[in-house]
Amino acid sequence: MITPNTERQMTKLDERIKKAPEDTVKQSWVHKLSPDFAWGYLQLMRADRPIGTWLLLWPGLWSIVLAGHFYGTTDIIPHLRLLILFSVGAFVMRGAGCVINDLWDREADAKVERTKARPLPSGRVSVLGAFIFLALLLLIGLFILLQLNTYTQLVGAASLILVIIYPLMKRITYWPQLMLGFTFNWGALLGWSAVSGTIALPSIILYLGGIFWTLGYDTIYAHQDREDDAMVGIKSTALKLGKNTRPWISGFYGLTLVLFLCAGAMAKMHIGFYIGMVFAGYHLIYQIKKLDIDDRELCLKLFKSNHHFGTVVFISILTGHIF
Image 1: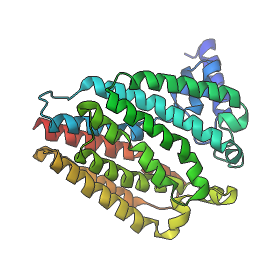
Image 2: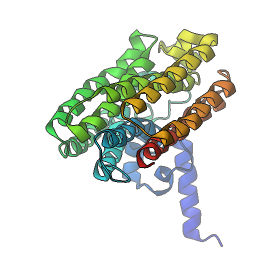
Image 3: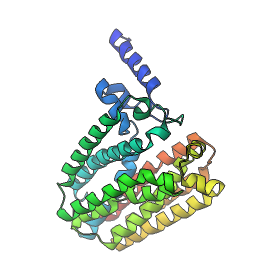
């Protein structure tokens, strides 16, 4: 039975979805549950689209477990406290990165159908409000960073340079996805240093593999907007590679798999890791075979499926550690 209160909630949800940008997740908790004063800010930090948080988080989780195995921990899940801290940190810092990105892009976003209803170009959040919110997110991120060792604090602080300059790259180079790779996979270095107080070769190899992974999945994502990007002067690998995207992504994903296997070998992973990576490799092949750069919905679906790839890699590392 539908009560008057339920009807009011449904009406409120419908109104929010109408005002929300095209690229939002329509049934997200942000639209259903967030109070009015927080709604625009939660959208600004992309709390309604968790895929970005997962893609930022996975390299850190992989690295923590890999380092735990390398340094001989006997825990079934190594360094659980670090895994929790990194999870919260990824949510907060991905949100901060999105605020910075939208502050850079607010004028261009206003010209693109998919993004013109975002909180800043639509006026639902003011520029001053966005800066204050960004400061709050960065303070939370700083609090989390201070729970880690001094070396890791320095490594984490260095990542802010990448977070700030990434949005500028799409204006000056056709390879902004490479800068995103440097930024989004920083957790591979951060996770290792959080465990050991240093950065070792396996974490560097894992970091490089993650960069090629990001080049692949974010090129797929960029094909959704290539016409709009060209119109407003935004550059991307989708525009650069065009019809040659599939062989390039095959190369990116191939290097991803090889480098991840090398990182596992250097960390002395057991056989379970390599068995799991067979399934991870199959997932990348699936993306390459299914890709149609002219199908926007499919590009978004394949992009989001990289959360599944991250999950498989994590399970592979855990399996290689336990067995």
